[in-house]
Length: 342
Ligand code: 13P
Image (tube, rainbow, N blue to C red; front, side, top):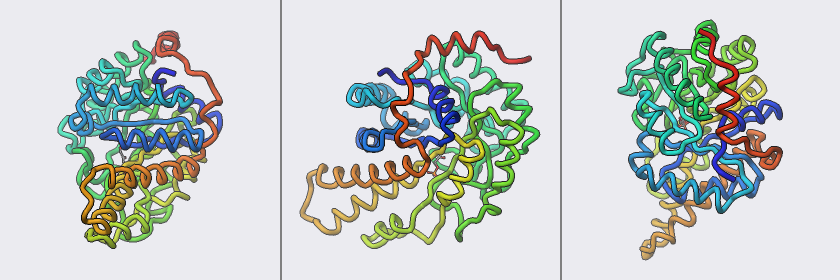
């Protein structure tokens, strides 16, 4: 099956009332971990690459690895999504390369850290929607800004200074015609999100619920949604790492989000932690090893375990074969039949 549109995967998730994890990748092992977890749990897949990941892996390698994923796992509907496109041009180059979904993050200026104006965000996002939809490609936008900085994206603040305003979210969706909306509810990228376990109040879940009430048909996206589990932190620290105590987003809060319109959940840090812990363990326990496979295999297995668990917790497990893929051409025709209101 060719790479599929994210819109279709999220529409199906909305029908089935479940969420779909969007896992970041930079290399072959991470792609393999996700696809193996998907096969094991029979889950649809969203694989996402940031600008940093595209530069690291080089576009052509990434693209062909993704094509390999669709060949080796033909039964899994698989989306290739651009995470945090910083400008329309970055989104266009991703579409050109074969991404089936792009995020235009116009909440920040192209430097990836300066909050932009509402007008700038609408203009940049709308421009991407027009070009992407003409090719059947899905668009995610963002209103409000995330904290932290990962791959050059985030305000660098604590995630509280630019929460999503529900009224503005409604206006934004109407003006852009996007498919999925990233919202800021006090999450941030990276391992250091909270200094104690966050509650629904810390996380501004009431705001998320309010946004869903006002936009019941829009697929909401939770960014910065790693749970930063203590056991993964402990493995790293046990084998010579120096992580400071930290808390992520509890899975039960994500599940509450899924009950309230969240269809895409972005996870990167948990997988980074799993990989690093597994590699540190081999280095500490078998210092005589020097074959990269001796540590990359356990790393791949550790990431697969985290991804399979999240797929089950988000509810996407068991849904890989619910539907037949709709071609991007058909998606483009559907979009053309419903132009964005001016
Ligand atoms: P985490 O750092 O919480 O994994 O967030 C990843 C993310 O939101 C990518 O866009």
